[in-house]
Amino acid sequence: MKSDGWIAVDLDGTLAEYEPGSPWDGVEIGPPVPAMVDRVRRWLAAGRDVRVFTARVGPVRDAAYPEIVGAIQDWCLRHVGKILPVTATKDYHMLELWDDRAVQVERNTGRPVGRSTRGLE
Image (cartoon, rainbow, N blue to C red; front, side, top):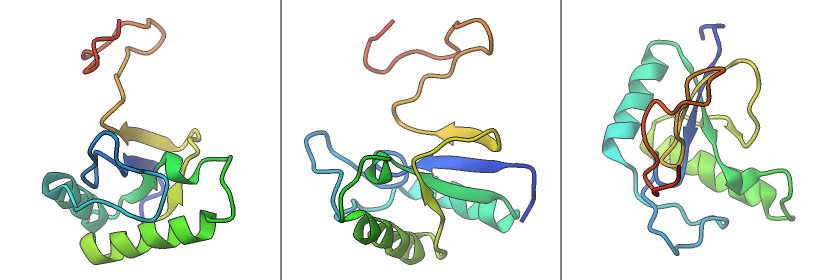
């Protein structure tokens, strides 16, 4: 794999379908989002380091943590073709975050590049 950082891909609503009100902290994971799964496969084929970035495995989890990670890894193997690392932690090697809730801002200005999909300003 290339050593130039990693790409974070959110699970619920980005890599897998998610409907508001659905439980997101258990082992049930929605069907794949084809466009995002294809994108992840292309990145992997190009040697990129891609990781699932999800609050399901955040720092305050209970004893179900290994079960949740296992379910996510099984889902990845089934739909992406490879087990991906699972994390809820950013670091300085993260290149980008692909997420249905993120709003990009210009560095050091606070000005949004896009817009809030929830009407927040």
